[in-house]
Image (cartoon, rainbow, N blue to C red):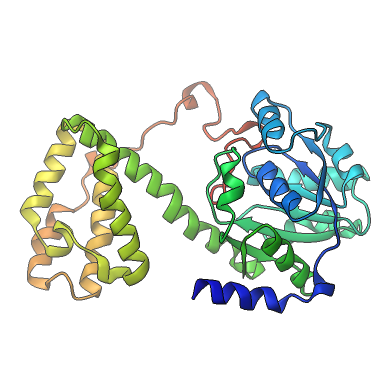
Length: 338
């Protein structure tokens, strides 16, 4: 079915709507930009310039775009017909304003950002200078290695563009191997929150579970979790809440209480997250009729808020004024946490 949908979408893009072979530039050689440019190169476009200042950026550019010169952002825009702005979300508005104010934007130039949070409104300064704005967000996590190009096959992209550029935006996504999914401008923040909730928090949950298994004496926690998590993810994608299982969904209050006691003793930092997710699971199980009301009262009592479970942790470096989310040159950028 997936292949049939993809063929149908491809047929919706007429040959006249497909972008001509373009010169491609990348502003911000984080994990995303070089991979997308490499995918466009496979489709026949020609990467000509990339900007990046850190050693990691230079290594990524060399690995994914060998021979493409590293230049300043203004020089990228001067050289390319299609420019990928792949920088962190908080950097993007200022970058666009600066490029437009300095005259770096050329009329008719395709300007593409890959932020999940923003639609095309953030590109308005460049649009007033004559640029053609597109928002193409790949819903995938990136490693900054060549494997990312292969993973783009079948990857969904959140696409936002003016109506007159919609077909061109979808064509670019298809050329990169992706599947375009139209997202309205006003829905972009909700769309991005959904992806972050599912993907970013999943990494945290898995990492914490592996640490707890190691503390319990399991020698290969990744091998133990792999089949279990794979099955759980597959069941959840297929069946939604009907896939809920485990002590919370069953109403085993005694087991949940034992969990909380053990976490308090061995990994107190995990307690607030466990309680929050267990309460959310209980609510959904109740709504689905999986959790019997007569068992829910005792369970919810175990999961009740406790002050000692909700003490926020100070971010590393916060005490001495460092910003905990500082990400130089977009290096920690991925498809869900831009």
